[in-house]
Length: 123
Image (cartoon, rainbow, N blue to C red; front, side, top):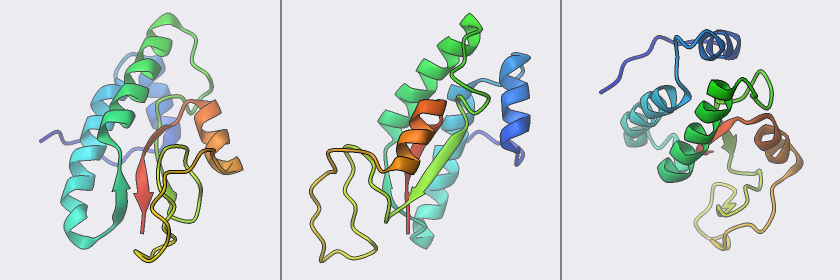
């Protein structure tokens, strides 16, 4: 299991820029921590495959010196009331429609445009 100290978005961005940190390694550590928290019911949806793909794309942008923003590669989650394209929005209830959303909510779209790595939805 990877262990990373708690780092701010600013510290992550600085680490990516200085090549001391890598978005894939950070995302992997976050997903491992999320798996531990799963026992507490903290997440209603995790997308490890999508998060790792987004992290790999972010890592390539940082290597090329073309990050989308200072938040590129920073892991983020969305509350289960926000729409995330391809994920269901259950609003904390299993009685709601589990159909994946066709579009992102405005906040999700902004996170994606900034290059944030979306890990999953929280309860």
